[in-house]
Image (cartoon, rainbow, N blue to C red; front, side, top):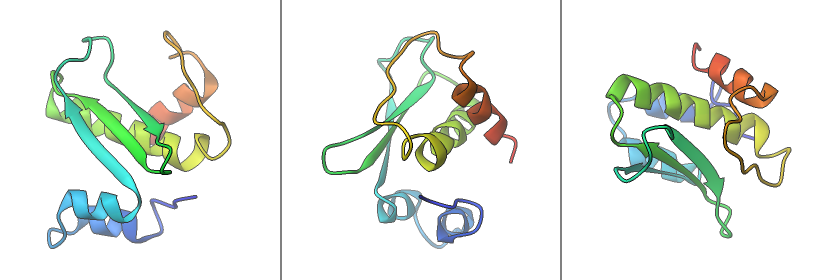
Length: 107
């Protein structure tokens, strides 16, 4: 499990010396901006067969919202994905793990 608050992931992301994608790749996290997603989908995360995490963010939403969605998806990587095999669904914003991920954005 990744501890974003106490480890080098957060420090690396805050550093201006290390490129964002290099930091994320060191934790097996790939981030993609997609411009073909529905406006209703802000982003999602999945785990590949190679055990890499992939965060996909909607490129048609503003940067501030993308940052919030990024943190939301990081919460899923840290807390939810290690406990669940997979989560697929629509209209799941009222599920407990989604509400908790929204709260994670205020860190």
